Image 1 (cartoon, rainbow, N blue to C red):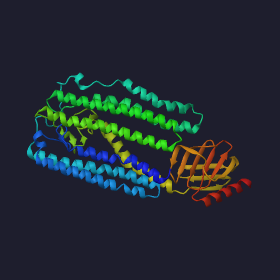
Image 2 (cartoon, rainbow, N blue to C red):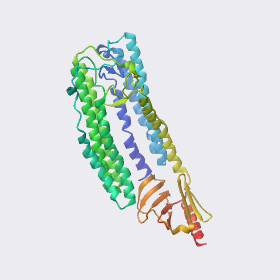
Image 3 (cartoon, one colour):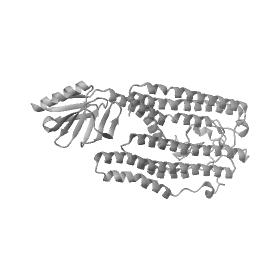
Image 4 (cartoon, rainbow, N blue to C red):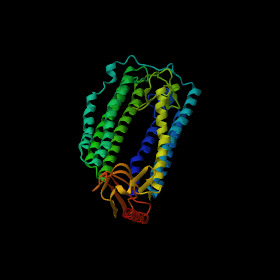
Length: 463
């Protein structure tokens, strides 16, 4: 796969995050459960010209940033090396998140200021309200956990096949790949019940509306987790049987990504439409107002609430109570992963790509070094030495596979226990086989250097 094809594949997988985020954030300007851009307003205030003006400006800003960030993706196609394009994409993903949340917080502040100025309050302001009038059976019954077992079993089939495979490369590749998707299926089984442990939706004094909103949220939440389990299981099986086919891998991954996004978005907006329509149709004039517990309309902070997981105010998702220690820890870990790990990974790929591969013979030992990939092979242990015009058919088991660098454990046709470190664009590489059955295949920074070092090894073996 060329660098350009890999970059385009990466763009196709990552770009949907931006329009989805723009659509969801722009949708926050529509009243749902009497909430507009994270600010609770009475029905009459929702139609106030000043509120409508703030919402229009907010949506314009959201879409302006959408087009700016879309244009900012174009330079990724111009980088000559995949490592640079990958680093740029990681930074772009982080940058794409910031404007949406900053805009939301800023316009939420404007609505809150207008709300305070006009005195739009309710007797329920600042209280956590529970509707005791809604009967448990009206809130929706959870799906049977047994529905999650078939996809989990299907996802484990490639794991079993990998374990009994006689090929070490297939075994490790299958276990890593299939195990990842089996974990997704297991997580579906674990996370689905969480929604039923949360407080039911409460919008106003109409228990029927509150119960209906809760049922819609729970039903669509279940659809998403069931879909994720089955899609992950089917992808695991597909990738296992087409482990050597890069085209099928790309197509299957794209189908999985877009199918899962479709299911999630359809469920999310089904919930949002219900949250927009049902409170308006109920005719109730009282409403619940928990704005004081939502910092910038985004983060829930309530020291008096013992729950760590809470329902998002709009949509079907869940969030964290930042007043709880566990909420702070989880949010801190997520922030560290986003703002520390992604840049670190970006830098690591660049360093790997541009660090020279070096080799030497010293005191009867062949030394090869490229960052963490290091070989020390006594010359007396070398059973065979080859200068290959081209790398035989190979499949990555664990490691890096870029257009300018392949490194790590690979399954190479005709060889066993192979570790490689080379630029696949070069026309030659050195294969060193040892008495212990190990194979090390590498080249240096140019074909001339590789051929010169091969001659040096040959001379050292003869002396």
